[in-house]
Image (cartoon, rainbow, N blue to C red; front, side, top):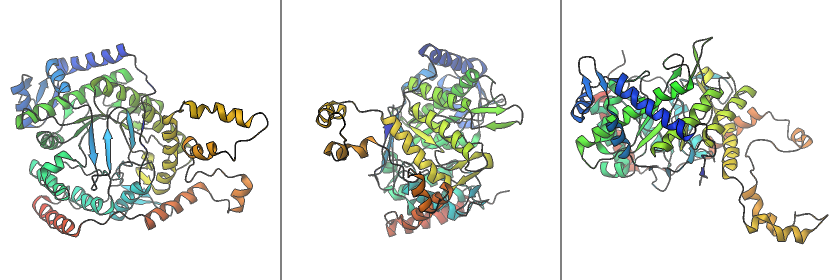
Length: 493
């Protein structure tokens, strides 16, 4: 299925001088306040590069010249490839892509009931992501109970490879040895580790621990990616008023400092493996505000939208691909509140030009669940947004001067070839949203939109099938998976 890609970047909230102010303030934070890095190798790398390191306190102050050098070494874009390399996503130049993710532990299932997630749900949402017209990346959408910290990424990879052909989220964190083995597992599908580096499935996902801290597990993991030249995402997750300043400007400064500090560590780590190593970096945000009345994060608010737009502008300033958040619904069911909040969040992130919009379908953060029906409904909403981003095509043919002259006053355009040639390109036709007259809707059973969405989800799950995975590759994946689980799969405490 060919999925349409359009460009955003039409909306800005920061002037150029304000972007420069945020950058200067962020660099001052790294130089003066510093960061905590809880990984020994990273501390040594920073120390050797000229940062001011207190090994006992794990505290680092990073000179601004190191920030500038690290940014200059980052590619301006990169490509993610599916199991079938013909299916790819190019992250660059305000091109907008949508992915369904969020990894809550619960689902609103195909009967409309909230329950704990299962491995069957993991499979279903991979299939649903591939089968929906406007979802570009098949994300892991739920997190079922696991027997160990390594079972989740290993089992997820096997399910993803069997049920998808396009780009898919298959990152992992853990010990250095586990991450290296996990990448070798991915390399089975590509044929070699070199081919995996050339055509990566996904990035190493890093959320710095706000305020201004890089934990041991994530840092150790992304250094493995950096040394190989694989993509890395830094997505600060500041909660304004709790783990960061209550002001949005202060939140942006801290978020930016956390992302920049990670970029410095990654690029310096890459150079320890090869002076020419340049791991692609994606600049992200998951920041929002804390509701000072309830001490809970607010996802469905204008502040999250403002932070998404501003973050996309900061990424553009550094010449980096960007990642925003699409689902901002605090509602507890797929109701009108969820529709309003999701529309607002998705539209803002897309108009900002975020290259990859995470959690763009189905997520109900207010109850830590993903909804089958909302995933299908959000697909139509995303289609509307894609059409908006396409804008209006102005040329001699679309201006239609000769056609208007031909029809003249009192005529109509229904039977014209011009209408037949253009209506599908010019007009958006949702798959699910009902546009029929009231009488036609009643005649078809007066079906509620949520019921129709559940039916479409079931239809996709029943009918969509990815090209089968090569049998030899599948056997090799299964054999190595067992070895990795036996080697690294210690039981959770």
